[in-house]
Image (cartoon, rainbow over all chains, first blue to last red; front, top):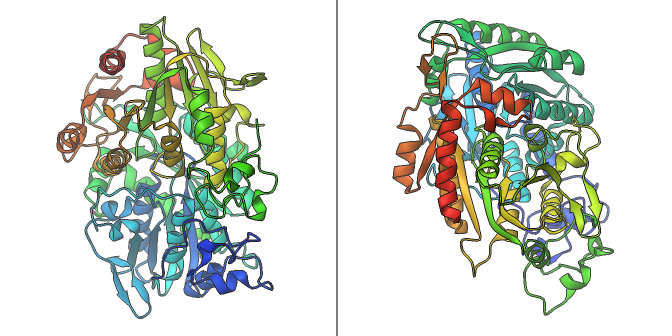
Length: 311
Length: 311
């Protein structure tokens, strides 16, 4: 794995690319300083080559943190992998400062091995593999205190130097917001000749303060021309384990996700209740496909809608 | 308000500072290119001067998104302002990609005015004012799609070019993670001669996947030598509105925040239940200090513990 770009990398699109002293020793210096170079990150060609056998890419996005992007990524992957046993699925956790996938997938403490064809992602199931910066930390409590360029370098490495092999679908779990990680991953994955090569699912909760950020994320996708498969409303209600009464935890003052989807013209894939049984299983990294309840039923419905987009 | 730093700013600590073509026209060019300059962001002196009448600064942090940093910031500010009517409080929302404070404080759609002494923050109450990028957007749905350096420039402007006036306490609501925003705000506010000049409160929920990220944030504070006032556990339980039964929504497999605080040697300030009454009031931007229930009682206890740190 090559070193991340230097701390003061002027940016490959800068006129100073390859010419400032920070560029000395950088493996991309000769490409960057070529006056005839195309103004494109040289990493993009590497990413395209590395992912040539990955059929579809799906970004799991949300402007708001804590709405369940990572949990939804895990749940979808588990269900898709069980429903399509002959397909191969990969998960890439690009939440560099807060990687959750190793815990949610029950792979905490696993190690990533290097082979001739790159870093091998961690096998979760026969047809599921996972890569996360969580596997590269000395201790799970280590804080990754990185500014944008270092995070972007890590994402490029995850896309270009991991031996993903043949995948039918690569799911990318993202951090909240619309910043470095999102811009980088979109610029690496987007192929203007194949507008469907990367698509997005948006996760939200029903309350207005979450929808506010999610509207921004939908506008981000529209600006970047990423097709939106649909919106998943998470934590839509809470079923009391004592009396069975279903309560709205986050009251949907303005019609919740359904109204927002209608207004912004994106499909609503379904709603998932807040389910302590599922939360506990996810915290423990257990496979939830053996649990049968209202939540997993809703999840199955969402998964079949998603699959119809990729057939 | 001066322009944000140029897109390809080499960084003030770079050897190329002030010398690359991107520096042309930047108001800091002469400072940056001075060979005798101290290797420090010239913005820091501006920030220090602008905040000379701000007694204390408090960062509201959490490695995890969606745990309630913004809501806790609003609730604390409302309570502190009511308990200490002779003190002045300011709130700065540095969540550039997902600003929530304008909605939570009931100030959506307000405008920021410019005077001779800088931008005037929006008055929320007699002794509370607020600044957020949310006030500068054309539409609330606009996505801020900025990489790190532009976000950092905005934060510097919020700290150095807003007319904060005399404040007893400035609360800073942050985005999730440990990246650009956090490094910038700490580097601008930290005063090595006054180690208590900026302190932090950490917000978490009880489940293990949140505590994982929060441990990273505590280590970030320790590395940056920011004293931690304490940890607030949010959404600790949910009280069913139908039968009154209290359920754990996010099961605390490993002892929750209490066990983590003991292990990491930071004080636990208290726990707040998930309360639909409070959530609804916050979504509507209402002042919650007139509500009397178990949540607001817990909040009062937490506020008095915080105040004892600032007396």
